[in-house]
Image 1: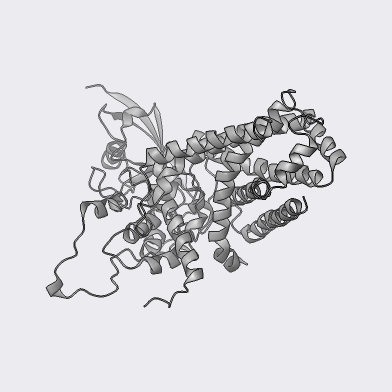
Image 2: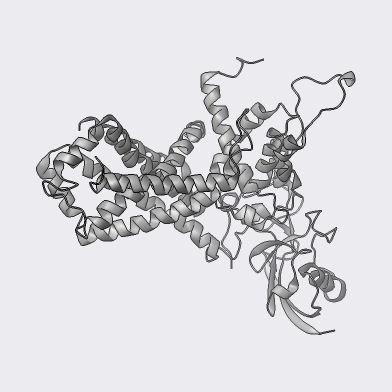
Length: 146
Length: 248
Length: 122
């Protein structure tokens, strides 16, 4: 059976002449495959929020000096952080793939005189930027550049 | 002709007799080329005349016959019965109050629809001597896709935000408002963007994309809603720099 | 409260959008190095190695380094806040939305302020 939707969902501006049955959500929710993906997409919010605070902590420690930095980097090799980072990487890739799939069609046909490139071009550009900047970031962090 | 039978589990609700919705089962012979609507019409015509449902054109242009088939919003005139197994569940459109059986209350939708001012708004009326508006094929393409909506409301049944946020304008209404915003003949974008940033805010959309998945006319309302967000942000930003009233 | 949220929605959406776009792009590189390569020993943080204090500090304290760090730390928080708020609404939370939104966006705002402090004091 489906769950109840908000009792005022799609409510008419004035009540009708007869009593109505309250609105119900689709019975295919939440188990429907697409709804599961959508819910997971929302749940990655936890990962992103946590990553933000982890990074805040890491770079706060950088500001405290050599010993603090060594300590926080060492903790990045703990089983907890390895698991968290692997989960985060999976989440980030999942978010990127879904978001990039949906991004091109969300560009208006024009804003003033400016027109966006065709949708396949936008998608290609997004992936090019993602892969390119990731490569650059990795090269810098891993010591290959600068 | 094959004489297969299928069982239909249909939601019934008579406000004069029933406390709340209940289901009723019908087992009927079906034909291999039937749509779901054919089965429902057969049930009403031959088995149970009290079953109430909306339908009209039988060819997916009027938008009347939207229902939940096995938990998914479908146009029943367009949905082949052969894609389903021995048991088919038919419910009224999700997220809407039900008036009776498979008939839902549409006035809430009509209200949201009207609120986006779905008509050409001109800044200055054209004199008859100026002739008609002229619009290039490229200008038509900017909004044509979003004009194909048949108001079937399947997108409202699919939308998780509609289910939970009563004020949300919803996919079809926003798509229609966006259609007019993108129409080169229209000057009403300022007014509509204010509505888009009001109580029914387009920003409530969480881009589940379900509306576009279920749309039978490939309108892609999710694209319209998210394009509308972009336009609303531009409108908001330019409003910060040039407060409205700075232009005539 | 609801009215304030409505007025701030375009800004929140912009921050969320950048959080998802820039956050995803920057986080991938960070996670590949610090999340995978570091524990595997392919990249080190001992003196003389790629992520030692001297080099890390030098890179982070450039103007562009600070800006990238600010984006890396703060923007994902806005993505997180926005999606968690929507998740709350999706699960029957429309009536508590103002409180949930205030808490989540407030946390992201505090985190962003802390991020500004963190990069400025480098």
